[in-house]
Image (cartoon, rainbow, N blue to C red; front, side, top):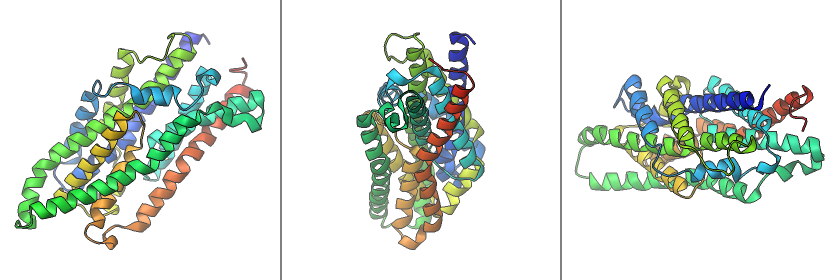
Length: 342
């Protein structure tokens, strides 16, 4: 297979991952607005897809650079490493989608990319040197925000709900919901916008990494066509939705009303946009789930179904090692199949 054909195949697989990311994470974008019955599922996915796409040129490509060149040493990366990483992320995403678990597509990509790179280093230098493939400064920042971003979502959602109850203390719940059914259109748009500008950049980073390692780009710089392709893929994926996960996110963690949906989406959007401005790829799934739990906890802790939340957290914990293992095995299969022997 020629290098050009291999690069085209990997870019196609990366865009498929981006599509599945939008498909998988569509639940995050629309769960609250569907659960509060502000929009029908069809209306909600169209609304979310539009704002996922229009965020294409708003926050630069700092997250793409962190993902593509700031977490794994490009010196050990080959196109086959990236292909194996994508396989690991896609397989794990499909598994968790099947079981209706809102795990992180972002962390699946991080884990898959790292797992494949470590597999190559392990084959070349020995298993004890596998972690040489990782750039620890990039991972430290990512791991910090893996915890910080959802906590920010929880706290902001809690604060926003307190502010809403204080500002509308003389209004009946019915009257409040009249206002927030309209305001939730804005908060859902803000969340989808933040989701697009953070999540699509991760695929941009992977595609640009392929172009650099294959020699088609001299330096790590994201081309305009890559930006447009990544946003188009994630928007199309969102249009197809992920109804299994919508059920978990929108109804099983806590019961939401329009005011709560507004607070959760606004809190999540604030946290994600902050992370994007700092060039950190975060799990939009983690953030919106934390924000929904934060809304539920303002009523009373029992309003949050902690058994469901705990199951989700365990799925989160498993995502990076599971996707890394799948990617590692995928790379071994390619290597022992006679590919990437250089």
